[in-house]
Image (cartoon, rainbow, N blue to C red; front, top):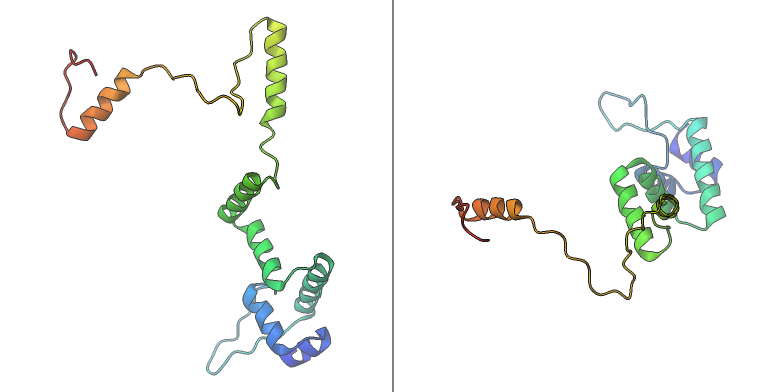
Length: 156
């Protein structure tokens, strides 16, 4: 069916239906008409069902079609999903990774074995233990930066 009939059956304007199609809220076209002249999309019952499901979600969660389209993008694009998850962790909406529960189990096992658990830094600690010196790494960086090869007797 043509867009005017589909829009009438869904209770919206043809312009809103085109907007939803541009956002990606309609199933992709499988058989695109070829030839000369403008290609008009023929809407199927599957298309109408998808739009009606999207409209129910928008009403149920009080969101816009653009917000729903972004939600679909989060589900399908791993880079977007990772960026949104990172933001959620930073703002406290998404809990940190479940490693904390594993830390508890690890500490319990270490106590049972008689090994003291590693010291944790608290938010009040402003000093961090210094890592061991890495002379080999420092020599490699020096070589890379100035192009010279440092002698073994240099004390950097």
